Length: 315
Length: 94
Image 1 (cartoon, rainbow over the protein chains, first blue to last red):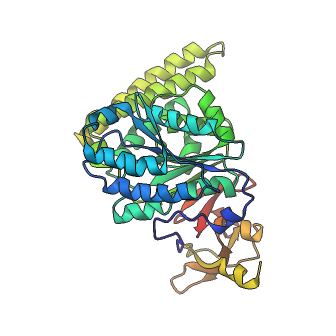
Image 2 (image 1 turned 180 degrees about the vertical axis):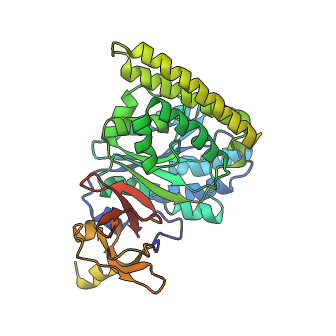
Image 3 (image 1 turned 60 degrees about the vertical axis):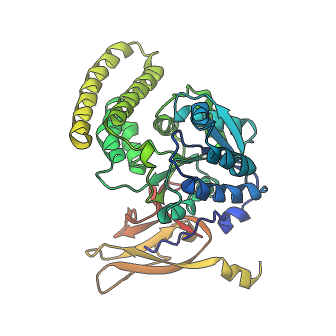
């Protein structure tokens, strides 16, 4: 089928979205890369888009950029960073400096701040900063990201996941195939099947979320990692409306790529998160502990197998 | 809205369904109220099925009806559910 998507990075809202009653605003939340890439080409491209969002005040709330304090202190003597921060980031967005244990806590900080200034019909749009937006395909992806909040708005959805295209040998793909989904099938088999009907990237960092559902996930226990998995599980468990949209071929920057220790950590974190969530939802059942012990034994086998496979593929 | 303005909001979109053995294929979606008879598709020499329709800007839900069976478009850019809670495809028109 012909794909009539924009070929440039101009996030012009579709006419249908513009024509819809302007009842809510879209809140862009940008997550500044934890590790610096050594250049600003990708961030320059990203903030060209952010500048256009900031200029469209009738449609977009003032964008927010979350910067981890550790990143700040690593770069505090970097004049190029200071210049970029002061002349670009601060010009087009409000900067939130926060101490965060991980990226998901940066999301919590940014989405939480945006939520507090938002209203019932608003939509929140998470934009990770550590991708190669400066490349040709990155530009194309920047031109598609605006579809995520627009799908929420036009099709009355609660959560829209942006899916990046990767080849089968990509480490993210391996982690999700042998780790994330295997663990989900153990702890939440029905919900995992539903999630996989929508996306192969249950840990995607690209998403948009409606105000009401964001309220639910913000006030639910927020995990410091693998929060997209939790949001997808909560969406399925609570019968929310989910969409998936392909944002294109883009990869995170080399500093953020998943080597074996990182891949192992991500699988271990996912196991911890889904175990915790399972306990939260079942601990009031009379026989929950025996069920839990049984699933835990299986989960241990799943995790060990996943780590063995990842070792073979990534080491 | 003037007719000129209205025309400017429409884009011709090709929908292609690869179902060489099918007897009948149609396109259903929000744009035709999921009516199976609104947009029958034509079988091409390569045995794939084609229909071209004009859609207004925005995001549209659709699916192929292949011999009466609702079928996702494997090349669609997105997936969502329709009002009957069936999984359907998503096309953006910008």
